Image (cartoon, rainbow, N blue to C red):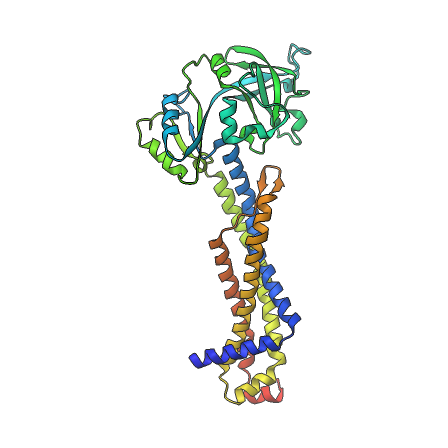
Length: 416
């Protein structure tokens, strides 16, 4: 067996050396494109969902988020939980939000009866500490008109762009938006039984719906409206460094004296199973599309090897006639196929990790609901390399087996 492999390796390398440079380059090019197709399509589809998921993490939940229990109106012992969170190693910044449902009214000076339902809609109002919120979610960076809130922003609010007709390209059936609302305009908020007028200080636009469909104001002002002077928060979020995992933080609180005071969630847990289900669906879709490309490449290699072996039928017959084992000849074609696939995959990996991945990180695809990236892992890439190698080796072995099984004398004389 060792002799068969050595002979097959020698014959395979010689055939590659003697083959046309352009022929070899074309096969390697096909292998590179096939590899990139296997990885790239699924990577973009998964990256679309991954980009959306990471957007929610950066703009809404951060690394960990604590939420109000369904049986409570706010997180009990919020100040103590915040202090405990700040004391943990690896926690960089902590912020909290006060939430309330409410109704916003616009253009009411011109229509006191509010006959147009688009002048009034139900919203979620978030009371924030502007500085702390910005340290975690960079909320000020997505203010596209006007200015961000500051400590002096009394009776001023930020409005999410999805609440405004001006920024809503497509309005979902049944959804309503506010007309003719600009920075500096007056709007009226009704929270519980309190109705108060506010000035629009800025417009917030984000691909995260939880952000772009909210109203933001100072937390101190919202607490005053809710008559909640005890600093009770509805959401507490924290940004962590790379030395600690979100699960370590949530596990700490789930086993602490505060375990019954809130829902302690990592950023992944807060998103539920939606993103994972979509990601799995897109992964399957990407694999199906990639498999078609793999089949095309396999057929291409089969045809190339078959034609190569067919044109060298007499040469193969002579090799068999002088005592070269047919298995060595088959091995030589398998080695050729392996080398083509290996080199093509190597070039593909280089292009993928040194050019494509960094490019899409720096220039994410601007999808309507996310900034799409190229989501690939090294382990997943290696799995696809193995699949490509196996398929290519089979594509090289089968035609070689067909040719070498011919009668030796017929092959030498060129008879079919």
